[in-house]
Length: 503
Image (tube, rainbow, N blue to C red; front, top):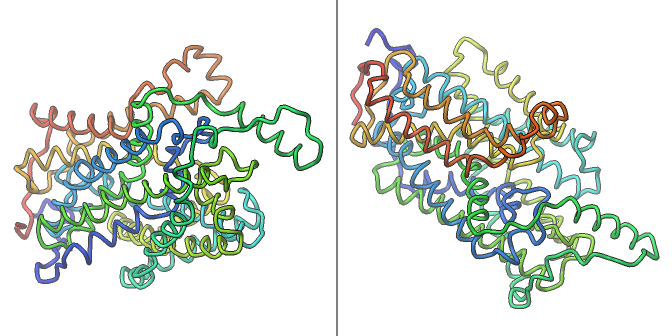
């Protein structure tokens, strides 16, 4: 016991008497995540910007929908269940149960500090998109970097960080009913586009390229946009597996940190049935229903010819709301979506604050969280986080191997927590390092291709693009397999005794 770090020695499980059923803990926490408008607004194209002609709708609707279902199943069973079961069975948070995988000392950094650090990335993403839609609603400049967008984004980050620092009770007060707003918005959009589903055909989704010379300024603007955008778009995805893989990259990459956070959420649950049912009700079903509704909305909007020529090729339901509902009603719903995103921002700040308080106990939380908030503001106002697929790839590469190694450790211990291990557990750290390199490989290649000096020195660099299939899932598999292999050969540190036994 004397070898335990102070944060482990002081860890106390959530008493069983204080546990609550799944519909009060797991389900509401995850529904707020999976119905966040930033997630589903680009789901129909897998986050590709620019996306291929017709997105993944007219020619590929069924493979895209099937890919989304596969991704939802992967999120629930592979990324969420093991951390959630560890949290439920011990009553302890992620940074404690993670010490069996990464060691008593290493657990402070992985997944503890990393989880807190990435939460500020999520806060930046939230602020960027909320500021964007609020600027559009009030007729302000939505571009980033830009003064008006930056002021709103900065104010959003500061307010969310303040509420997160105040504690979970304040976060709960702002998040009780607001996650219901996206459900209402999706239903309204679905009702208004449903009649167009039967009339949708491939030609609706493709650019009606204007071949004659424009005769007025309006036609000239459309002419330039159509020809520029059409030339910039990548070729249509050709196989169902490409589409399924793209959907898995988008959904799983988005969910990776939320899967590991299952330990923190499920430590307030009563039993394994709560863990499983809560995951199905909060993760699997909302992902499929929200994704399916979004696809139907976009298909119906195009099938009903509601999309004006200047927006043809845009498959984002948030961008299409004004032409579906009218600008005034759409602005009301867009403001409501921005408000509904605030609890998620507060929750990110709360998790980050708890992580920093644990990993840096001697640093005033106002300073650590304040610096993190400044970093989030910088990411949001500059527009760095505007490409969500880039963010999701970083998240998937970071937490794919974490969830894989935790699942391996959980299964090898007989479906229970094996307890903390001394120091830095090599099996966990090596599996994460290799898994992260694999998960981030395509992202690094893509970034290098944008630099002329890299292309000149590595003429065959483009041949390695997309070399790693479905990076978040591949990173998970690598983390799982390497942890098992290294554990078998004895690359794990010794176990430490906790001061209080957990069931």
